[in-house]
Length: 64
Image 1 (tube, rainbow, N blue to C red):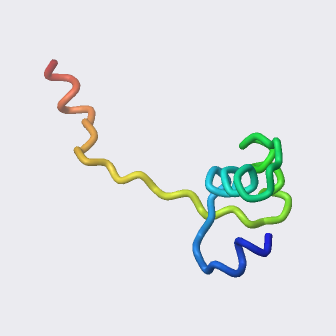
Image 2: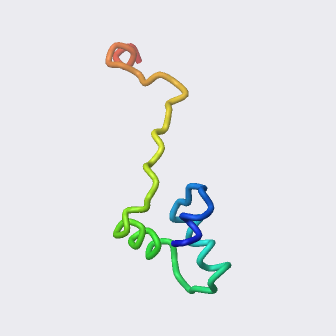
Image 3: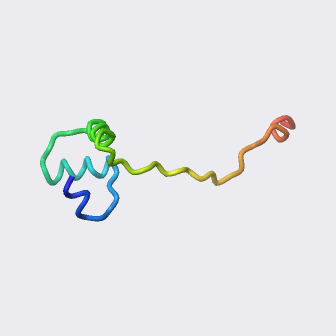
């Protein structure tokens, strides 16, 4: 946890999993790290995916 706070960078659970494996030699999977991050409330908020095309509305679908 010190690594997360001292760097100033945002760590997601996947990046944190790799860090724990590499630097600390832990045998831990991403699901366990995700659960621990939820309990400690250190997860980053999820990005909202922007659509690159408009969604179809009812009028366009009826013409097909």
